[in-house]
Length: 355
Image (cartoon, rainbow, N blue to C red; front, side, top):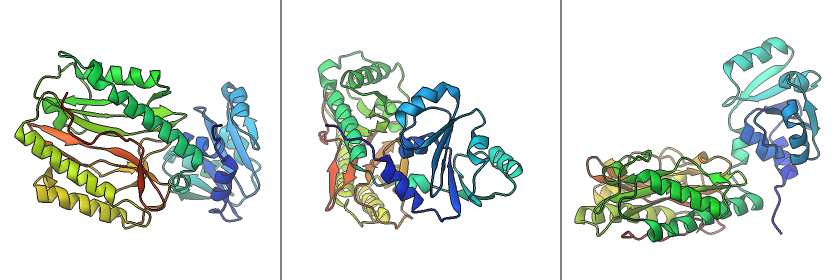
């Protein structure tokens, strides 16, 4: 029997972060989905110590009732008015990353007796540690992704383009049960592999090309993220050397993962490995990010972040090195931190596979 999200527990943990005089106005759609299950495109949520109230418009009257339970639902085009008109809490906390400056000033003018506090990442920080339901959905998304990727050598033929590879992968993920792709699939062959976030084109993948594929599936709103770099034909010496450098750095990063290890220490170890191999200056992006209802969410690896990694955090490890005019390599896994290490959710060969 499949698990169900425990919205009551999520609300309880949120309330624990609020004082008795505070109410939180949630406007980010992903945070609303996380807290109560509502997936409509228009809605606002008010959470107080005693009540949870959702406001949405008439398009979502049936949907909101079906997707939520134990909360008050108001159908009104004036979302803020229906939520705040009779609110008793003196302090309203708003989501600074989502509420616009115009909306903030409108709230101040419309509800002058309310003390407004701008917050950052109140719900996002709750989302860092995944519950059993979330881990199940992310695991399913990752399994679909790697299963689809394993089919690549069976249908890759001479003359296929980057766009065609992306399309085939996305179709295969849907056939395997994905609701959607997790993000715009990156397929980069030859010189394009040196572009970290290359958009697929009509370029034909040719013998001698490095082929970098960064993709993922989405299941029940939860994402997966995986990158592997292949070579078409046999690798040249420089391709093998570049791949080995990234392979070793990624393996070192993964090996360090366990609870209470700092994000900065993992970044330092991976960077040191790439520097030792002579490719550190070609690593131009972050080492990894959280994965959940968003493809990029808290936490993020950073050299300056000395916070410690928590158990049940889902995060990517994705070092790369990109040589302009030659090609690039990235290897990425989505992993979950366990009580004594990590579990790789995107289990797929880390060898340089020759296509």
